Amino acid sequence: MKVPLFFKSLLLSIPVGVTFFDCVGYVARVEGISMQPALNPDGSPATDYVFLSRWAVRNMEVERGDVISLVSPKDPGQKIIKRVVGLQGDVISTLGYKVPYVKVPEGHCWIEGDHTGNSLDSNSFGPVSLGLITARATQIVWPPSRWQTLHSQVPKTRHPISLGKSTSSNGGGGTNHQTLQAQEKAS
Image 1 (cartoon, helix red, strand yellow):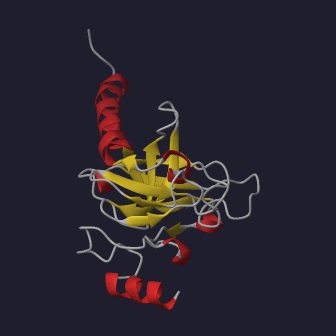
Image 2: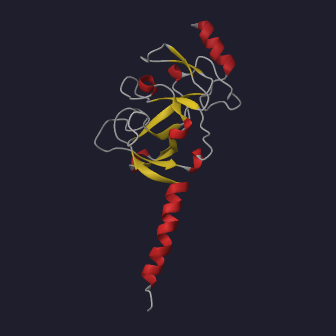
Image 3: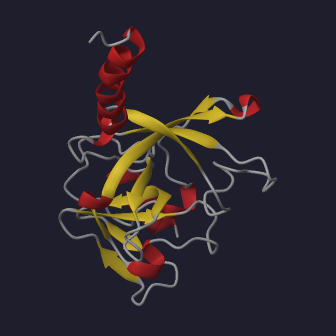
């Protein structure tokens, strides 16, 4: 019995496609207003679609300011998209969390939505394990009018009070430890 070329191609393309989506990345729709103005800026029915790179987080290395996708700590059946504000060892000034300041424990990060007050994030459930991170959003791919690369930058008002061990990279936010200390003294 001769197997048609179509079925041979299908049998080869399915494992290749699954491997690509599992290792490299995929496109996902962003719903809601929690990441405004970076994502879904005008709140219109046309929502942003982003490329989520699994490859970018394969070693669980994230930087301050990265927009990441992760499994929700509140509902494991849901994926959420937020910005990394603090890394392990950082001291964060919280917004409505049960304590005013949190030192992010080892193996965790502090995540927040850009639309403060309209986001279910670490201010609701605390630091999240790096193991919950599934991908990093790298580009907006739809609609065409919004094509752009998503840059790693922490909003100016949400920089950590003090930086932890991982200060070798600038954290994407453009602020180093001395600048943070100068900002604290000025306040």
